Image (cartoon, rainbow, N blue to C red; front, side):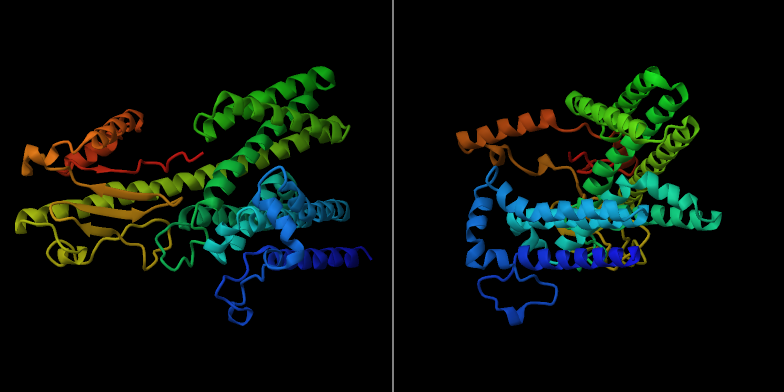
Length: 451
């Protein structure tokens, strides 16, 4: 009987997801008809049926009025989450149900408040939303999922953990802008890698580490003293981990993280078992789940950074030297990179970003006459570009004469920008100098901080 209720739940959830997708999607454009729509395109009934026009107007006016149309769709989603949490005891099924509910919350927002984003990104929008929802749900239920995996045989436990690490590695290193058909790159913006893993994923993992530590301390010391020390330890640990993973977050954000961790710890202690030994073991499980998640996210991101650094400092440097050698030999830069073959290379070098070498993983080169631009797409949608130094000796002073007050204002703005610009990487300057190059890259060793 219980199995039938669980099956009924997922049938209802799947029906709601399909209904939300069809109703809230961007729908047809002005020159389209239903028969011409691809199979994955949504009908977008809320944008075309007169009965929904008032809700559409509220959404277009923004908050707080937009809460009305959003709440109409969010309330059933929240009821589904409550039903699923009461119905399932399995951590895996609870995580799957939670991911589905998150998707039910995402569809109304992007259907009403950001339908242009949905329309522009086409089929990738729901794909990215589903991946983001799955990652977030898995992060929230990481302690329960780790406990469930530990109940399997040792071999299966290792297989499950290896699959988790492999999945994070693929998402972090293979989601790039190198593939023009976007077979692997389902997100034109780094929603999954940046916001799903590095930002939200790292934050959730940090909370698990902090709360697990705090709950273990509270169980070992017991009483109010243990609860107080455990809560304080969790707050300090969460603030410290957040400061490290978010690259120096502001004080206000650290205080918020500390309060969340302290409340999370108190909740685990109050709702946890009364037996001190069992409470201590559960605290350690939460701690280990957080450490595993944090190491997986940060470790795979570090691997992605190594791919970028290797492509920029090694592979691209050989190409830059060849371009300079070609100019010295012929008096001008090549029209295209293939002109360097076979005198300098047997084939044009290609940047390796990730383990999957796609046919579109290549350097983009533009001949600018007496200069050039060399680019490649890296992880997290970072576009690395190199330009040689500007040769002032080739031009007369008259070429740099001011052309009015507007230009002078522009130069003033540029001076202000230079003062705020990030410092040049000393290691990279050495690499370029050793190669006889004096130009500069616009990307650092690590992808930039975007939050």
